[in-house]
Length: 133
Image (cartoon, rainbow, N blue to C red; front, top):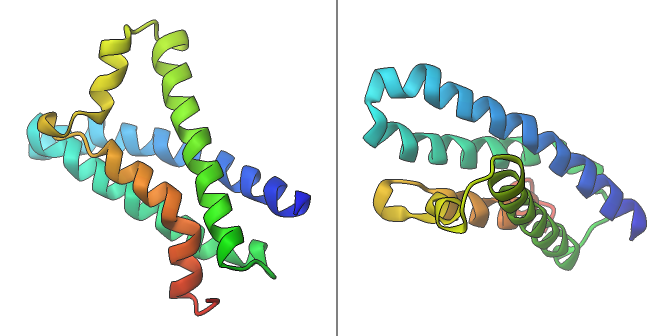
């Protein structure tokens, strides 16, 4: 079990540069191409797809895992992602709680809730897609 948790932590750490690159793509490519109003939801969809794709590729690291393990890993990733968002927004960037909460505002086109759902379910979904469950 410890091995599974360490591997899942390692894979989650790979998601951070993917998310940062996604933000760069949004600002440098999607905003000029689509405008701010469409770039934000497009970026959320892209990040969700990237998370699922990376999980699909690296799923063999979780050999021997069962459905409960995949759901546990997804829950861990969800908790780590929420903690990361809150620490980055509040502590590192010095934003107010209200500003930090805007990342969850669907009315502004922010699809962070979809990203969180994808993050939580990616290990399980990847296992299903690869025929492991």
